[in-house]
Image (cartoon, rainbow, N blue to C red; front, side, top):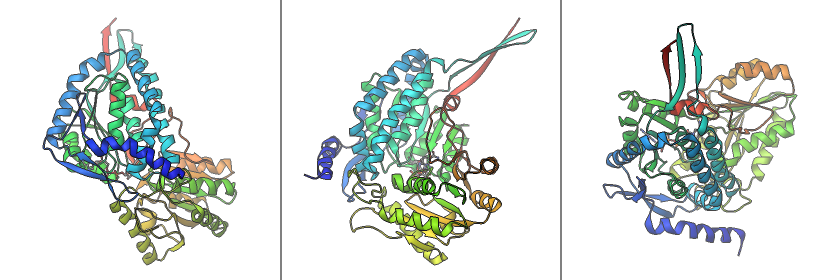
Length: 493
Ligand code: NAD
């Protein structure tokens, strides 16, 4: 039996429960179908076979979940931080214990490669540990005094919150939002992405088995336009943490306006990796290719634009093309696979449409540019050269293993090109000139920048974007600021 066959057999064993019983909603500690009885199917991008039928929640299901979260809030928010910490650490341990199940399930549901999903499951546990450790001090504040008044400033959890997540690395991203919300003392209604609903169900079960009281975390599956919309409009939901596309963020802001919803948005990106001719080119090529071709390029911080100094443009793009051609595209459960199938035929069609558009607009396809195989949503790692910044492939978030390379002359032009997009999530800079790095990072329009490095996350640092890439920051104490209200009480002295 090959490794893939052995892994498939394991995956089947993990998926069996969903194949038999479907993916139900999870409200107030119970696994329940949608009130309407409606369902939808989740398909595997590996071969488009149906994995499971999923409860299709709507407004009534959201209302029930919000009622459960509201009822659970007084007790959970008053549970001492040290106690919340203990429970959330147990959740982290339980995630670690079931990391293989989470990773295998996610591979089959999303098409992401096992080598990345194994790490993503463990990162989910790290998110719980990190935020759990801050729970005991989350409410702490400061005392300030004037000659006549004494002020005590502290924080309290905002209330039940809604978490809406996308389909790329869904488990890890859900923990990134849900862990700090729970550590803050908030209760949660989670609406996972309709393309990848399975691991959200695993997370809520794991959390309750680890001791999270019922009603503290609830999951309603369904589509954005009904379940998602109702969650953002619900008067008892005090804040919405959203990860997804920029245009969905705009809709959520409008939907939440009537109830003055606090929003936190992690949105799209078209992130540049800028390479000057004084850089360590071997490392730059390695990092640039990793950042666009890992996780299928379905990654908000992927380096989808390669801006290269004209003196090294031909050499560097030739090296990138070589790497792209050698990347293993294959079954997500093959440990050697780097690029698996894209999430869904609809998304695959979107990515493939850019290949035609690039040709029509006059770009050159230096690698890839085609579908791979007959079955499943596989596309080849692609490099466009000879592109200009006005082209759709340079402006729009393709969200696939697709890189657009553009030459620049000098710092000014590099900066102008880098900033000439609607997005501003991440930027990667390669130069050995420290002064140049300081000048560039001072002027780049991005929430996060890495100099001579790929994206290496450190959880205490802020994560988030500027411009159309988001509102607010996660990580460190920033997450707590979002899920908590800061209040001041003043006494006469
Ligand atoms: P999407 O915006 O289509 O969907 C995200 C979620 O929003 C889904 O659960 C969907 O059901 C829900 N939704 C859709 N319409 C809604 C509405 N009107 N009201 C409420 N909810 C609604 O995004 P996607 O295609 O699932 O994910 C890919 C996008 O996510 C990319 O743009 C990517 O860059 C972004 N992303 C950003 C980050 C970040 O940290 N900045 C991280 C991961 C993904």
